[in-house]
Image (cartoon, rainbow, N blue to C red; front, side, top):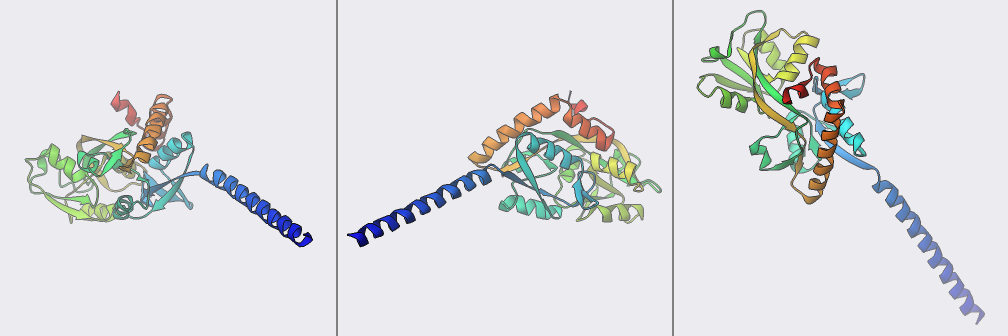
Length: 265
């Protein structure tokens, strides 16, 4: 009888200990689940949107994304690759979303988008020393550079369908700046915002030709899932709030000396 009682007591103690361990693990899981992390694809050298300075990732899009996800209680984990890697990671699900992504109808077939946080325009730039293009009416017969994975070449075709220019695809904007300056190519089709910042703050020897054109909504892309639909709704509320309270305008003025949101009014 004593042996039986000892066995029952030991079994009870083991069961109690096991239950205690299970409760502790459950509490730990609950804590970890509260640490919401969003993985964002970005390029490490995309001044002024995302770039590294003193070992830290900074830039216009960094400030925008940090403001949004801080507002809704997420920690941002930056995943840095070249732009084609950003696109591949987004498609494969290695990142949740990506920076500076034009919300085009074609991309809308693959992704769901938040509301735009700003609207980008395109420009053509040429050499400031020996300009090959004086206006957008001079595109015929010119050789223009576009960057792999960007949408600016489509914007150019939509706005200037009759112009007979030749398009060359580069992987790096830095190489484009060099080749335009040396006269290897005639011009560069790119985003107004990064080119304005490069010219004014980094003194690249280019000048913008004529006026900006196109009107590309820039938003956060997500794969098409019900869970992401809920997150998109949260982000949209935050975007509206941060536009109304002036946060986005402050960020735009900080990086460009221009409030791009004012153009939407």
